[in-house]
Image (tube, rainbow, N blue to C red; front, side):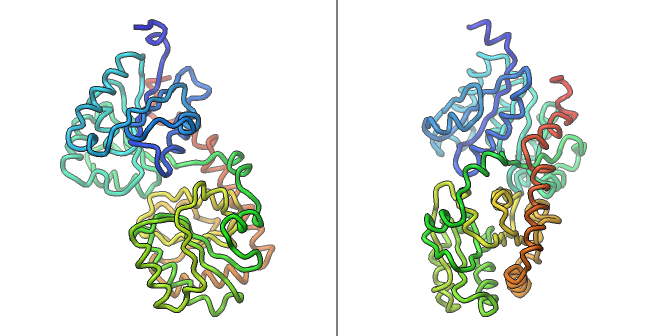
Length: 375
């Protein structure tokens, strides 16, 4: 055993995989330790080795265990043994685990304090998971990515002190994304959109939770009040694609709705949109809202879940599922004066810096009482 590894203090971060937003989630937590005495090892339970993922993890060491989904079902004994072996080779003082399975593995494979980061609603609704959390409550802290998720966790675990279940918002590397986002003209060319039309944008899985059906119906109702040639552009794929395409034809707006499918690095092209609309009914946070804010795109968001917390005071909210209200908001943004939109953009940048930047969240993270034992 290398004695240098045992003298250096390490933080172990365990992620189920790096698909979707979870690579950036790993980065978000790794950079919190950039100016600390701790090194960070990030372990991905699933997913093949990828040099870009390794670089994007912002960690001192990255391990790809490359388990299949089948291997991560049930008791997950193989993953527990692998993490136990890794833990024996470093002086780990803390483990950060994203989602329940990594939290379960971290608690069983290590003896260090564990922070379980929760990115969804309903994680601890099941009786077994409640029992498990209670069994490890002395060295387990839970974080929700929004107050809405935090409150759901607290309701699931009513015996826990509130200080053991806190909020730590997702965040974004503002300057890096600014540099990556292309101009409006280039974004529209890449996405195959006309340069001279008004565009409502949406990015997300085609899933009932994202409720793009309400978005399409609201856009269809607003269309007569929008400029000629206006488009609704939806980026993403999922099991509802055929149903949503059929809906556009049923409503007679197939010519005005474009379902573009999956676009790699879609966040680079948000300036193609004149307004960004998120109509989810189950939105734990809404990273796409931050990406749209960096692009300076006005926001319309359903008044529920974590999205409401992101958009609060810098965007337009509508009652979730209310088609008439959504159509009115879409038309209102279209007719907003340039000065009003400029004020929106200024407010969004200020909110990003105050609440959702790496720097803003770093101070909040280190103030968590759970981390006092690391100081």
